[in-house]
Image (cartoon, rainbow, N blue to C red):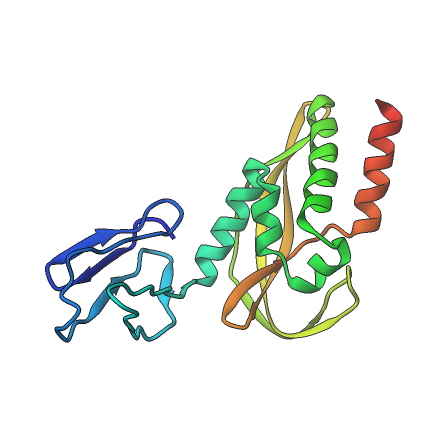
Length: 202
């Protein structure tokens, strides 16, 4: 996470764009507290215990994105076609269907490139209504049933052959082991059919 403020006494730093940070000049013989100020959209989920090994100490800190922040990330990455990031946020059961991120990224990139050439795309993806927590829900892609799934009304602009219209859909999210993931509405068989059609057309 970028922009997290961390400090030990008067020694303060900010994490870089990859989430890394280094604090120097700390007295290893004095009792110290590592303070972490989570950025907007994240909450601290781990108590911080700092253990020295020689003159250095490494501390990884778990920050959990809030549901609202995760939804924003998914919508933003979909708008920008960042398929690698979408893969990371996808429910693990759906990731397993693809096998690895490279396969998913290659397939989605091929479909998107062809759609763009035909002046077809999806843009302006955003939350458009009240989020509802469902007691149970069955994923149409995997057939698996889950508990405590969040249904998120979403609107987007769909452009077909250059003609734009506003569309609505429901997206689904779940907390797995302390982190939110989204359910992709695209199953692998359908995407593979689209990829085959793209190859045939080109």
